Length: 178
Image (tube, rainbow, N blue to C red; front, side):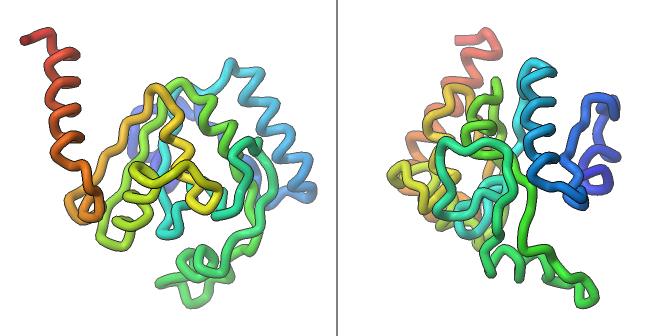
């Protein structure tokens, strides 16, 4: 996270927290991470990607929609994707992840997706039924979720005209113009 995000944005390192995936006791690390979130007053902004299979965090399809931070077994597809372009890297088969309930407790969500490979997962998450088979569909419940997509990731959405109208209305409301 440091190399991919924190080093590129203006954020005080004291405000960045990532569970230690190499902990000798990952179950205790997950519990401590969940306790830290609570002790710090919760998460203001949760930034999410979405996996090709609809996972958020490492909440793979079949994950409990009420889950909290825990150790999760990764799908074969996720493990393979994590190894792409890294021939000498042995991707882990388990990870510590915030649970879906923990993610939904954030004050605001920002989900980002790019590329055609994410289009089906994005459509399932935003327009499909709420289902454990698409963990990202849980964001439908969040009152302050923003989704940013490139055209390829949005390609399978059926309601794009409506989303564009919502975006335009939101921009008017937040800019103060009519």
